[in-house]
Length: 142
Image 1 (cartoon, helix red, strand yellow):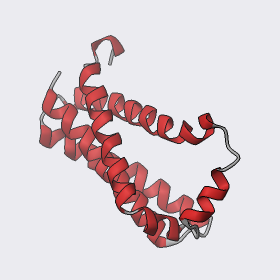
Image 2 (tube, one colour):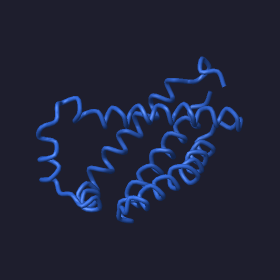
Image 3 (cartoon, rainbow, N blue to C red):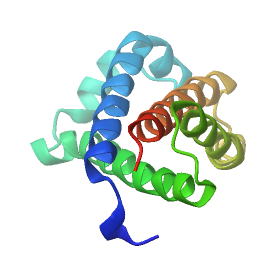
Image 4 (cartoon, rainbow, N blue to C red):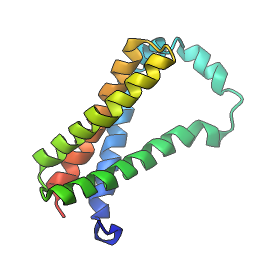
């Protein structure tokens, strides 16, 4: 796959949609997500109090860059399958999630003794992200 042939507009739109999904998802599940980490909103405020602004926004930037990279990779997968449809994109995203994200997050969280709820919340988020990115890129076409 030649990067010059990637439909970058579809990748950017998909990344924006996935990023917005993540913002809504974690805003909705924020208290449960923090509890699964053994934290509270107050403890996070204290943790972040001394951090510079760039350190506070860096995870949000990284999330968006990650979504862009996922978009380019899913675009490449769809090029290799030869199927650019919403269904093919969503299924490809779900397969990538199942084979790589679910397994990686579950293994990493198991070794660090994280709560199963944290794994469930984070993995469900990444499933949504990959299905959204794959679906948009697949529906958009080449």
